[in-house]
Image (cartoon, rainbow, N blue to C red; front, side, top):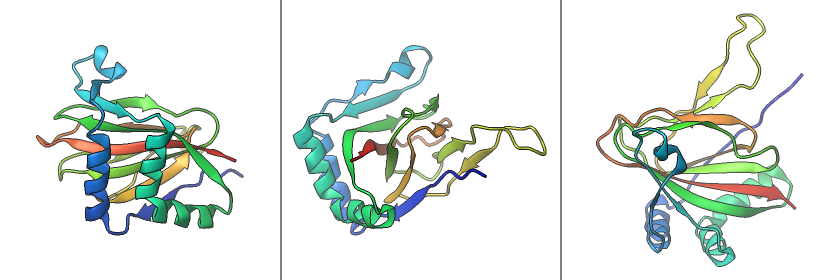
Amino acid sequence: LFTVPIWRLKVDKFKDKKLKLQKLFSKFKEEENIYAKFETNKILTRTLTPNTVIGEFAEIIQDELHEFQQTLKKDFSINDVWSVSYAENAHHPIHSHGSTGLSGILYLDLPIDSPYTTYVQSWNDAESDCTIYNNLNVLEGDITIVPSYVLHYSSPNKSKEIKRIISWDMKYV
């Protein structure tokens, strides 16, 4: 009756692109995330909203975006991009990115003990009447893309190393 699509991509030449992405994001200061204000939660974000920066980001991962566009068979544009850094024990509460469009995550730094993103089914299981949670096993250099309305969160980072992702929102054009 219903399906929720998910797309998974591997970043080609990830080590080279990672260096370019780190250089791009280093131009912007990490700031305390709103979620950190309510609990002892060390989440830092860098928001890259100027169109020129979005263009630079899209240029770095243009091969992957082109591959996704070919799979999707629809045009889209990136309207926002940011990074999130999770210190030890930092987590991100359940949230979505709105009711329309698509949202992507690129796993830039993923230490061994750090959690994957957990996705939440928005309706209960018919048999058990329980909420369904789904963790995707990902590696550094993986991209996941889901509809923006999909609820998701990140459990506490158990690693002493920083977990860092780059995320972006897209709209159909």
